[in-house]
Image (cartoon, rainbow, N blue to C red; front, side, top):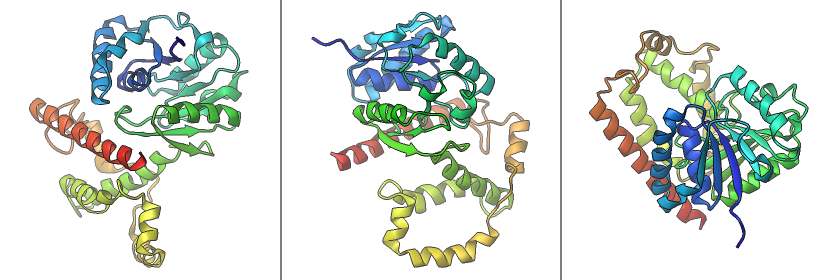
Length: 308
């Protein structure tokens, strides 16, 4: 019997745990480095929960090995290494510098950074050609898309290997050919978010109205067709004329929303602090998170059935 394929993950926050669940559900074994051993019980519980949501066997969590030392994993048997440490550039650069000396040549090293370019993370490393970005979206196990981003120094075969691994795990691979801040999906998402916060700042709509406009109007169609396909189905001439009318009044500020900046300065960050644009008591937070994940699971099933 062949031994399970092997992946190494660094960092077991929510992202690391959910990425681990994807691999474990796919029959892989996972060595995960998490220096804070007091976090291990919570990490193991999250992995089991995520495997269960993927309709996998919770017993597969037994193939997860938690380690506290970066030098401990058997990197030579791994097909790739995925970094999922906190989103701090200097921390990621430090981790990659250590990994470049620990991981045998030829094994891809990927970062799950959501905004930092892999070019900037690995730019001065001898092994920078085997470094790429593998960007998941929270919650990683429920959102099927994953971006494979080629840095300025990345060997194209590294991206091919990472794309092959993720496709084999049932993920929808999004290839990104240039290493720009935000990659592809976040660039589109943040263009929307800039306008969403702007209309609130202008008094055009409340946060609830903005959410409803996206969920129950134009965003409702996105599970069936992406924005380009949707506009092609409607007729591109309509989009051209609408753009001429609407674009001049859209927000194009290089700075984040003043209203958003004010909330952050006041410590109103959302559920983690109990208030954001709206109050977030614990009971409401738990209910909303459960509804959100249930809806994502339903959406994932629709897309999985469509691709079958």
